[in-house]
Image 1 (cartoon, rainbow, N blue to C red):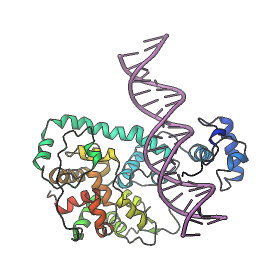
Image 2: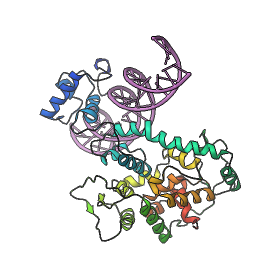
Image 3: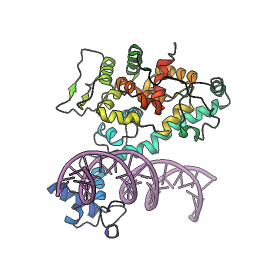
Image 4: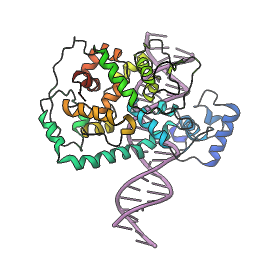
Amino acid sequence: MGRAPCCDKANVKKGPWSPEEDAKLKSYIEKNGTGGNWIALPQKIGLKRCGKSCRLRWLNYLRPNIKHGGFSEEEEKIICSLFISIGSRWSIIAAQLPGRTDNDIKNYWNTRLKKKLLGKQRKEQQARRSGSSLKQEMKRGGGNSMVPDNNINQNPYWPELPVLAPIPYSNQEPRFNDHASIRKLLIKLGGRFSEVDLPIHQEPSTLQFTNDISATEQIYQAVNMPSTTSPIYTLNSNGNQFAQAQSYFDGAELNALQGQSSFPAELEEIGYNNPQGVDGLEFLCGDDMVDNIIGTSSTSGGSNVWGEMRTLVYPPVLLASNHEGMQQGTLQECAFEELRYPHAN
DNA sequence: AAGGACAGCAACCGCACAGTT
DNA sequence: CAACTGTGCGGTTGCTGTCCT
């Protein structure tokens, strides 16, 4: 049995809001607030709207200081890097961009950024299709991918994806015991990311990192910080976007995210389909990082840059402790490629 | 000029979760 | 502790404007 609808669907107006409705809603909320009950609000002010619709309208358009359109390059970078690190958590991404709403960012991503990135990837991919990348894929055909990801196999842009056998590994073995390698990789990653000054939402109780150590060191610390008490780690202006994204999650959420196996398909696509390069994304991670990951993914098979990047923002400690999750998940697997098969550059 | 295709965006839907009873 | 309710969120839809043929 489903839950009761939040409102009487027959008696609510749908579709675009009229200026009158906007005015009613706005003036009421400005005077009285929402009263903590969106469902009851439309009746109070005589609007034939669903409470959820009112809430959405207020949050996305009527509340003060909302910006629309005109995303700056800086904002694009933030969106992209946060998307890489946390996926489609639009509300969290929106929290990093004052005046932007999750809906706006989501729309912007879906209509522009995604296409922008994919478009570029596909062009390059087409140019390469007859080239060497496929040979390389075939050469490592018996490779070590743990990527039974249907998304990838369904991917129209990767028609000849070889069926790759899983790498055997012991479930008992602590696969993430090379802390120095992790550290190296994280530092490499952190150091490569642009250190944009993000609008920091400083919480009174947040843990402020110091300037005494490098940003990369802070990233490493942030990523390894035990998070059982749900602190919000906030970096200073030298902070890193990844670590900042990380700061939004407590341990439970991180674990949940680790279990999440469906990293955005389009990013899987970019990464997987373009084993030779993630051109156009250098702004996200720098050329060397790109090269490194490309090298890894193209030689060890099945790895993808997004999986690696994404996984890297989660505490290795947590990842390592979750062997079952690792076995199930493919992303974690990807993340370990670099460590298992260090790419000598 | 007309109409079809496409892109952008506002809004809706349904699910999950947290709080309350 | 279960049932109920409200809220928040992400995915999706559908309308509208613009571009292209």
